[in-house]
Length: 315
Image 1 (tube, helix red, strand yellow):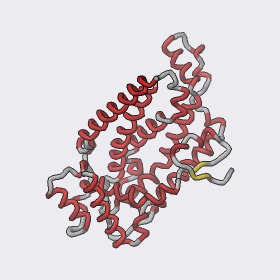
Image 2 (cartoon, helix red, strand yellow; image 1 turned 90 degrees about the vertical axis):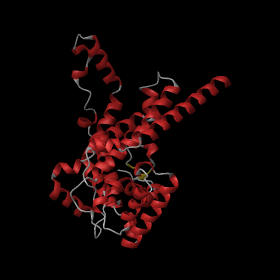
Image 3 (cartoon, one colour; image 1 turned 60 degrees about the vertical axis):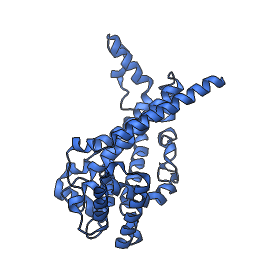
Image 4 (cartoon, rainbow, N blue to C red; image 1 turned 45 degrees about the vertical axis):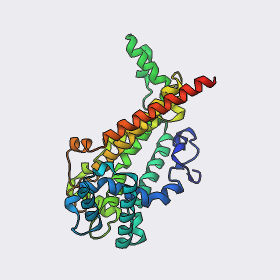
């Protein structure tokens, strides 16, 4: 096995396309930006932790200020978000020191490393590397034209289906580590917990299946992220026009950001003190800023249409 090569997410398919090398998607930018990323996670979950905050604490005061100004926490302005992030970063540093800024990072790194290592190992096993291609996918196995067409599509795109299968399998297998990382980031208890302590507390308080809270929207985002892959487009969706691809990527990008928000918040619903109080899924979905989503879609569609119109004039 070669020495791990640290790359950004744009090379995510290199894990399977170049099977002689082991890639870990943990670029330096992810490491340096982790304190800021984790702070935005905390802002996202503020409104679900109101009853768990200690009166007088920084998060408690921030949430009261937001409510006093009658602002929806899900639709904060950029300036308000930056101001709140600065206060939360300062509070975390004062309470726990520099290490507090990276609370949850070890679990996040373990999730990334184990996930990518699992994909690498499984892709080396012939019995697992092509699970969707068997004798049953032969078009000769049926007389139904519709089924034949579907089977031909499966055999034609077996490489992509295999990559997606391994990606989903690795995400499911390592999801408890991702959940643990998110909970450690959000956790506002009396003292910081280790990765193993958080996993143990989750299992003791809520049972095994609590380790998979929020996995459905997470897997949905994994699938849509794979479908946005340029190599997937160049082969499976090559017959579509550029504008179709642009619109598809825009829809997936905007929807992913909000669906991932749903997954992140669901991971933190727990009876454990210091995490989010449970909220019904429908109420959680309603709390997402859908007006902002509609605005982004309209603006994105306008920009794509303008781009295509300008291109057609130049040709």
